[in-house]
Amino acid sequence: MTDAFTPFRALQHRFEHWLFDWPERTGDRAIQLVATPLRYAYALLRDLFGGDLGLRAMGLVYSSLFALVPVVAVSFAVLKAFGYHRELEPVLAEFLRPLGEKGIELTVKFMQFVENAQTTVLGTVGFVILVYTVIVMIEKIEGALNFTWHVERPRSLARRVTEYMVIMLVGPVLMVAAMVLLTRIEASAMVARVSGLTGTSGLRGHYAPYLLIIGLFWFLYSYMPNARVHWRAAFIGALFGGAAWVGVGAIFTRIAVYATQAAAIYAGFAILLLFMIWLHLSWLMMLLGGQLSFYVQHPEHLRTGHGEIPTTSALRERIALGAMYLLGERFVAGRPRWKVSDLADHMDVPASVLDGELSLLERRGLVLTAEDDTVAPGRDLGSITLAEILDAIRHEMPDPRRPDPESPPPAETAARIADEAMRASMSQTTLLDLLRDPEPPRVS
Image (tube, rainbow, N blue to C red; front, top):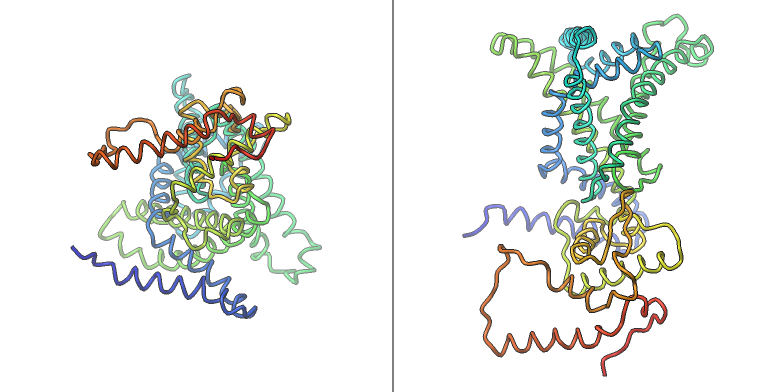
């Protein structure tokens, strides 16, 4: 049966060939400079309409509906200790400003919910549920940004507990303090004279929310993915994400004005529908900015995106041997252990591909993941043979879903001879031998 999308895929492949291959072949510097921004734009549009980012954003919307009041309540409790709790309402109002008058109504209702949560005796169980909801929300954000960064491994449980607590306690204080500071700076007489806004008090504090959202995105892109993110890549993604959030918010504000007619159809549900749509758009802009920060740091992924990266058996074996060699090298030298993301950057291999091979090695006990998400050899280097490393990649753990073909006996014999030849040539050489003598034994 012919796939209905085959002509579109063929057209897409031709366009990718023109965009990624043709400028390099021409050697024209001007054409390459023009093609570079087009590649980023194409990659973001492809990911946006591919559906995966939209699904992640929908998942975050679902989590937000449960976690928004607990998040605000926990933030309110933290800010109350520093005397900033009254500044939380303006920050929430700025986030909901694209909803127009409905945003003001939602802000008032949220603050009422928060006041109820503060005055009600929750007890130990209620407090634990409140904090758990906030932690789950932060975990969802980490998972979504890990997806944009092609990271398969989340933080370890120990790191989640400690780092999520830091976000819960320090994040609200820094966010509100930055908002207050930016507003006061913009409202100062000196800045007003320099910017020419003297006498236009209505414009004072106008840029503070936008700078705050860029700073918040910068923090999320730098801190939340379980990968080493360069500050420049995170900053460019934050600028794009913040600008996209502001632009979409301006358009959504105009739509929300005309959406009042929907109140006659949806009655009291209209405000909830508008709120969910705005939440979805906000999360989608955040994820797009995170995706751009990944592409800025790893432009080699612009063409493939989240598509399946083709590998061969020989390539997987090379990756496994190279990774084990680097892990053993650091272990012998007594240097800090590798993180998967750093190891992938060093080997110039996609992190998702490397993580798959490391997972196979870990199942055989050849690799060990520490609590700080670093990886190290799982056994003494002198007891790990090169044959074991290749075996872990060639012969994965039994899986009932994997086919077991009934090959003709001559073909089975040929495959067995090839496998035995590999084991015979590599079974006497350990990883420690390879580190001492980088030239492995050759098959005679």
